[in-house]
Every structure is written in structure tokens, then in C-alpha cells.
Image (cartoon, rainbow, N blue to C red):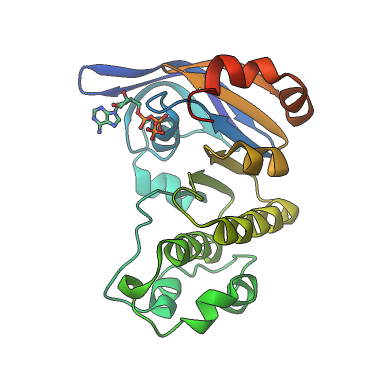
Length: 230
Ligand SMILES: Nc1ncnc2c1ncn2[C@@H]1O[C@H](COP(=O)(O)OP(=O)(O)OP(=O)(O)O)[C@@H](O)[C@H]1O
């Protein structure tokens, strides 16, 4: 479905990803873990065509490396970024409506059922939303846009526990829908609840790959690669 083969990424002269290989298979929810600065966001941006890369990134059997980001988005690769990309001057409903694309399995009504808070606030301006509501709107916008894979960058960061639970519930629903997800997330409890498999990045390289069961059983992985953030 999504395959990265020896992907390198650069910001000018700075060489940030040094040969990342990973895959997300149909229907899987896969996490990308690692300490701050390991290259997680850069990996998602590389897939979305927002960073200069070398190596091969393919989606559904087609190489997308080096293609413009709008072309990659049109193919159904949906990146939900940390700063969320909401239009503050538009209402919640307007933000959703401009994202609706024919052929999505989620209609406006479907996302309102999934996110009752967004329905309650549908006439509010994007600017008036809390951090958690903005995150929900960002995910909801991706869903009505007919995603074929979701790339989520720290969707629970900085949110209150009750909102984190709601996001986890939504991610569980997305997983059940069969749309694959590549999730960057620091909250390991969230990752263990949802994921099929995990990758750990360190200094731009994949240093661990394993199933959720193996990851949960092998505490040494988090001690070695993730302990400072946990
Ligand atoms: N726009 C940029 N220009 C130059 N260097 C950058 C840029 N964005 C990120 N970097 C550098 O690339 C490296 C990887 O950053 P990245 O944001 O991918 O890490 P991360 O694993 O997502 O960490 P975090 O959890 O802190 O977001 C870091 O050393 C960072 O300083």
C-alpha cells in the first residue's frame, strides 16, 4: 500500500532521514515512534511531498517520490499536521464543506455523528475552537476528503485526557473502517491500544520494527529508544 525504500530527506544541507524503509499494508494502523528530533514529522512530510527526498516512496504501486504535494494529496494521501491547517475565518461547517470530495466513505453527517462536539459547534468560527476541537476538525476534514491513507502527526499532543480518549475512539473507528493509518504519537498507551505494528526512528534511521504484541512484551525497546520521552 505505502512503501518507503531507503528514503533520505534534506532541509538544505541538513541530512535528516538517512535511509528510512517502512511499509503500511492495507487496513493497518502503524505507529512511528522516536524521541524529539528523530525525524518522525520529516518522514510524514516526505511522504506528502513537502520535503526534498531521495529513495523511493510508493503508494498503491506507483512511485510518488518527488511529485508535488497537491498531486500526492489528490491520490488520497491525507496528512493531518500538528498545526492543524484550520481556516480561522471560516465556520466549522465551512471548513468541512471546502474539504468534501466525491467518493469519500464519510459524509458531513457521518463526521458529525463521529464528532458530536463539531456538530454542536458547526456555526462557530475555526478560531473559537479549543485545541482538541481543532484537532477533531482537522481529522474530520481529512475524512470527508476521501482519504486512502491517513498520516497523523501527534494528534493527542497537549490535549486533556478526556479529549485524548475521544481521539482514541475516533482513531479506533478509522481503523475499523479499513483506511490505513501511519500515526506519529508520543503517548505510548495510545499507540499500544490502537496499533498493529510499530517502528522506532532514531537520528533519521529505523532502529526497531515489531508487532504490537512484541513491542508490549519487550520493555527494553522503550528503555533504549524512548525512555526520555515516556
Ligand atoms: N524546516 C526545517 N529546517 C531545518 N531543519 C529542520 C526543519 N524541520 C526539522 N528540522 C530538523 O530535522 C530533524 C528532525 O525533525 P523532525 O521534526 O522530523 O523530528 P520529530 O521526530 O518529528 O521530532 P518532534 O517530536 O520534536 O516533532 C531535527 O533535527 C530538526 O531540527
